[in-house]
Image (tube, rainbow, N blue to C red; front, side, top):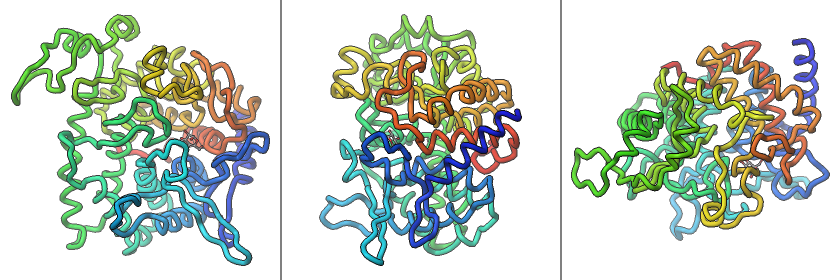
Length: 455
Ligand code: GLC
């Protein structure tokens, strides 16, 4: 315990060195402080990367940086309908930004994915922003900030962007590949779980923070109308356990009409039955990675499953089953570093076709089955929410031993996460922040209230 505290203090000092300033005011954190690798865009403040850091700042009472971040990123949000249709849509939040100095002047340069490798759309940014706004309000009680006209408008246009009628047939959100933490092509276009979990969390945050007035009436009604079908859809259609596997195994295809069993026309041959029936622990289960026409992506994606526990997108019982699966499949899902981003890795022809032969995403590397310490904080939070203190401590013990020695690496490679990632940055900010967050949550699980919904 004593040793953990010393480590956490050391980590806190490093975290503070990553703070960036805008006109002398703290406004965010760099993605990494590693002078040994080319900066690329790691010298920027990423919205998703800042979240664990922001939670740590709130816990430590350093609320100003989070407040500034929320206000300034809101100013970067696209506010007007674009006429040439080549600009990002109204409501979109940037993936990242940096402070540019021009003589005496400073300004913020935002990247909406228009500079990013692969030109990926940062769909998750607006969800993380809403999540953070709610955490900030919970931590400080400053409701007036969320209730200001600017914040109300910002929230409204985020939800408008998500709920605009397009071509969807499902209550889930249709997005391009690489629209979240996995910001490279990984066969996660369509209705990936991580986006659905964050979308659900964000809808709940907006529902809580949008004032009940005439201006918000329509959007509040739309939110209230979307949460129940979304929840039901995920709890039922994304859920996979040995019983469901049996049902899907015997599915008939080409069924037409409203009341059919195999609604998405999943062909049994597309499911890795042999592997799954061996892999599943007794009483195991989890949410699958994606669902679409004749598509059920059975990969386990950690962040989506963990956020679904935090926002109560899954039922309490499903949450317990997910935790049980993590415990029983510890070697596969945790191994030498909590936690694997997705399992299993894409290999062979799947890797070629779905990643476009991406060498950074070789099997068991980086996004394709690598282990990411940033997931530790979310794992610990979800475990504590479900009273699995034992699992939280067990995950923490692994990180304690390795993270400082490996200089707070960004990610790990290998089937068991034993190798420091081939191209991993050192002193990766969200690695450090997530470690402190996990430690703080274990010491005081009451902070869970800021980042989760009981029911
Ligand atoms: C990588 C990650 C992304 C993260 C960024 C900055 O692109 O895939 O999730 O936000 O690095 O750390």
